[in-house]
Structures are given as structure tokens and as C-alpha cells.
Image (cartoon, rainbow, N blue to C red):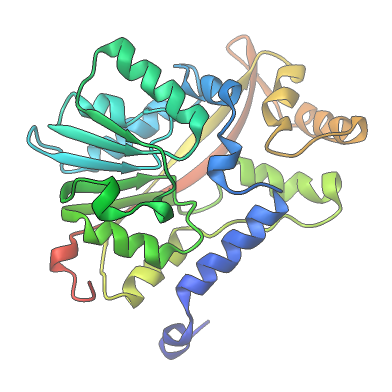
Length: 288
């Protein structure tokens, strides 16, 4: 057990940076935006049958203090899963999304729906110039499972600077389903252990170190990866697991064959996932 004095000596932003760097290097990409800059992958994620996304949207929006007059900043908006329905309930939404494939799908959906109160900003949050690129202040600033920033402290400081009301970040409290799979199969696929990225505990400790004392709520749900058959299961996980050779595909196929369960005419891979919402009001936080 680590005493409180030892915790005070830990640089929690450095912990975040180190774990992000290690996890990203292991997956051989530039982060979340690089993974999602793939139109086919985004379209599968954006479909109504895409796993738990509808439930996630309901949970996130119900956790925000939404009013008809609110101006909202959605950081890492993806294909607009939250920004688009939220735009029907607020005055305006600014959606920051660096991945072009994500932005293209979101902008198409916005045009088709005739929505005129969403502004899309195609940049990484760390690249944003707050005065040039945004129209602050915002009543609500949030990031929903999109904290891919290498330096989280700087990212939070920027969120606080443009927010006049509530900041909320949503992140995993435990391992997401794909990291649960990676922990089990990565050593067989790639010959090295899988090292997970940072979770909500690091965020909380960093906020506390910054003098921010957030309200924290944790919930869990059963994530179900639903596929039509074993081949579809292999295809669904091939990209995340960096399966490139026939030998790796055989390992993944064997893994799934032992774990997929038949349900409703298809096959399901289930995992219990824990997630957290951390909310605070910058103008009331002593350290901001």
C-alpha cells in the first residue's frame, strides 16, 4: 500500500504520458485518431447495431447538465454519436475531431439531418488555439472516451480555460473489452506482454494534484461483441490485434472458437466493462 506522502510525490501527468506512450507504441499507431481514420471502420462503428454505442450515448448525455440554452464543446466527437443528438437539445455544439474519416461521416450525417447548430473543428485538442479556433466560453465541455492526449494536464487546463460551467471526462475505470482480449492473447500473437493504457484512477489523481476535486460516478455494463460467425469475429478483431499473418489468424481463430457463445442466431463475446465519469466546475475549483 502506498502512503499519502508517497502519492504526493508521484507526477500523475508523467504516469499518464508514460502509459500512453507505451501503449501507443505497442499498437504501432499514433493514437486513437490514427486508429479511427479509416472510413470502413468508422461506418461499422456508426451503425445502429454497433455494440454498446447507443447505451454509451444515453449514459453520457444523462450525465451532463444539458439545457436548451447551453453551448457545448465535444472533444473527440468521433462520427457525432453524441454531438448530433445533443444538438437537438442545446443551443450550439462545437465538435472537435482530428480523424478525417470520422469528420466526413459526421458532416454527412449533419447535412442529411439538416442540422445547423454544429460546428466541426478538424484538429487534435492539443493543436487547438483557444482564441483562434474556438468561440469560448462553453457551458459544458466534455470528452467521451476520447482522452488520447499525450499530455493530459495541459489538455485539462485548456478545457478549464474555455469552460464557464461544467467539465466532464468519461473514461474506462477498468479495461475495455478489447484490452481484456489483448491481455489474454497479445503474448501469443506478438511475443510480448500487452501493457494497458492509463485509466480513470490516473485521471482522478492528476485532478486532485491540480487542486480539482471532481464528482465521480462509476458504472458497469456487459459489452457484447456480436458476430454472425467465426470468420466475422476474426475480421472484427483483426485490426485492433494487429493480426497480419496466417499463423496469427489461426491463434485468434482458436481463441475465439473457445469463447464465442451462440446467442440469438449469432455468436457473442461478452466482457464486463467498468467506466467512470469525472465532473467538476472550473470556476469553483481551488487549483484552477
